[in-house]
Image (cartoon, rainbow over all chains, first blue to last red):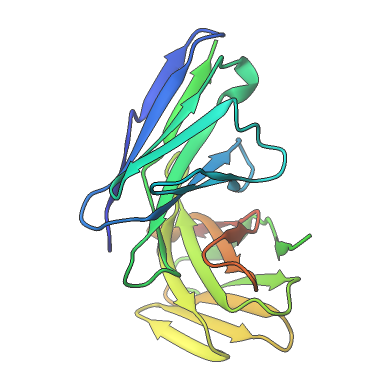
Length: 116
Length: 112
C-alpha cells in the first residue's frame, strides 16, 4: 500500500507553546489529507480536511485558529497546535487517499503529543 | 448524526477459531465500508474495503456487507495471537467524497 509518514513521532512540550506536526505522502501525490485525533480508549475523530492550495475544512467544534493547517504541496500537510494546553495531549494521525483510488485512505504512524 | 456502531468487546477467541466482528451504520446511503486494525499505540492499518453487497475474501479475512440491514462484518479464520488488536469499522457516508466515520472499535484477543 501507499506510504504516509509523520514527524515527529512523539513530542513533549510546555503549556503555551506551539507544536508543528508534518504529514508526508512518500510515494504518491495527495491533493487531500485528513487530520484525526484519538484520545485513549476512544476512536478516531476527524478534525479537519487539508486541501492542497486552498483552505482547510474544519469539523464542527474544532477551532481553526488553534489548529492551523497548511497544505503547501501535493506531498506535505502540516498541523500546528498553537498555544497547546494539557487537554490537547492526544494521538494525532494524518491520512491520505491516493489519487488512483480516492476511497482508500492510508494512515501515517501518528504523533503522540504530551503537553505538560 | 451519522453513526457507526460496534460492540466494544473485548472479544476473546482461542487460537485457530473464527473471530466474528460486527458493525452497523446509520446512514442508509453509505457506499464505502472499511475495516482497519489498530494495535495498541499504533495508527490504523487497512485490512479490507467492501463496496457491494455480499462477501469479499482476502486470505484469512472475509468482509460481509448487507446494505439493506445496514450491517457490515469481518470474519477472521484461523485466528492467531498476532491478530489481537482493536478492529475499527469505518464508513464513507453518502454525500461525502472521502470523509471516514469510525466506530469505536472492537478489542479482539486471541488466546494461545
